[in-house]
Image 1: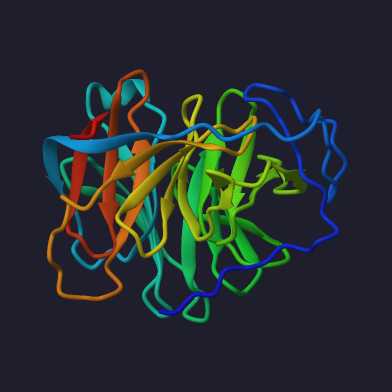
Image 2: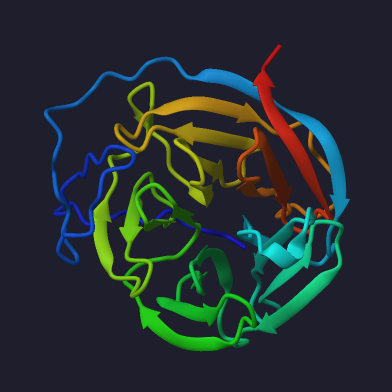
Length: 283
């Protein structure tokens, strides 16, 4: 698979939305600029992934999205995950226990290339790559409930509890806010930069805490983004997590915070394993 970063229209204004700020009143397809001017980047903290445990995963999962499903009282201590996968003719979405046992799975049309997904209350939203199709699903059964159409590409998706909004990546250095009920466009977060330079190829996302985490496509790298400024404040080196699948496209892709802990789940395309990790100082 070859991807080309999508360049957003130059007419779109930059948003500077602080973490936790409500943007529910922003009109569709607009961006509210609440900034008082650019803020200088500070040097990011370099981190590494300290492995706590490993968990088996379907080795054929060309992982595009990884999410920890909000706990149900019937789950006990077990962790449920949501995985969305890519490749035309092989894309699907499924839930599984962290020990690897699948719960329910749903295929998507052979013409569609599946991308990231996120749980939003009773719904799941599933992106596709270049078709402009977003699939709305029942969060428990994965049954398709409808479709929305968007301009541009779909890459990564996450749900932010603090703002009640979805956040979408498209392969550029911009992250877009989406309504969790309708998927309507609610504007852009500030451009993502590291030392003043744009960070393109933002892919899979996690926004379960105060920092937005993003895989950088084709790099063994996670970046932690301050949503208020767009600055990269953390870099996590994932190069030690290499399952040696033998496929060039099997890059790191999948990041999900385990709620109320300092632990994360990370994986990659066709890795066949999920790593439970902590982010600790590099070196």
